[in-house]
Image 1: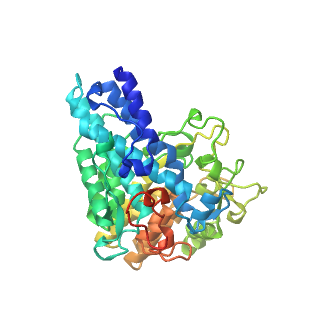
Image 2: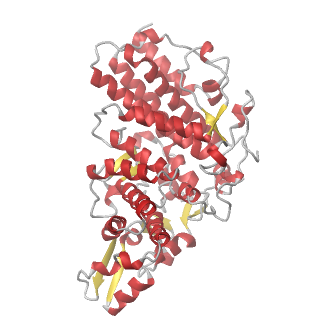
Image 3: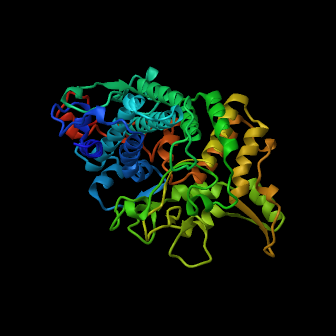
Length: 488
């Protein structure tokens, strides 16, 4: 058997393993001799074919299914598995949930294989090895981040975060002897593992130049996001500051979505027409695009936040100057079948994912706006009302909001900017940043996590409620003693 044939067998094996295979099934479908994996090109193929590809296959669902449970989405998708998730009444045999679990553990297994064996590769430089290791540690960390977001109660729900997390597997699975039952770690232990992997990943110099692959900036973006969730404010500032100088905020709010992998993209999952041959009902374009099978409509709750972006005081100042504010996140990134002239109330759909023909919209994971608003929020928790947070907030507003005179000329943009006098308490400034974040990052998979980290209800449901947690798939509980989540 040639090396290439054995590599192909390994990739197929890893892709076909079910979730219970990856954790404890005593009968894996086949095995591979790791001694035949000794060529750099084979390891690079393994990185793409398992670790990245398994994540890519379910990146759309990882983005929109959490949003489907929130007050920003009127969930109309007809598939029963997705209906269950949107209505927060999920059956343990839900195939969408099972597929997400499977895909993430497949990706983890691919990363584990690389981490355990890359140093055996022949004729590779240390920088080439480091490049693969850095990516593998990042991908494994990102996989576990998604697993703990979906299959466990949120950070802070239980004292010391001792609530059940997910099983942590760090050893690769190749043969029957590799399969063993693994208990669920606590949420704290899972986060500690993620943070450890990210530190290891950042110790390597990753040489990728495209934001479609892992980079050191993507590593630090995830570190900043987790620090915000865990209320480690100084770490959130530190890690976001590592990222922000390396990217440029585009002048047009549509640029990130229409010209993918652009100057403000930190990491996104690349999606091409060939990834969805014949169309794909699970793609983010189908779910959001008004011309496809739109399953996610914008809600009055979202429109209410949009209307609050210009404060009463700012609106009064605009009217006194006979000027008008136009939020281009409304006019350029929302869409409707209604005829002009339009008000916010007429819009029905997000237009961030507009490629309804090829279904090839990339999936946003980290972009510059998130890091700017993360730093702004964290600084308020540290320093109270401060100029830097307000300046960061105003950067997002200046890009998004136009001010026009009655004759159509550019108006006085300072009328919609904040200054220190606009806030009486630090909570007022945090709320303003959160409102901006809610609009700027809408329909990119942030809403549920943002509500939960602020201990806010999720569409009328308590932030730590059982029904917001996905069940451990029945295919897993049927073959093991793994503990099911409460309520299932």
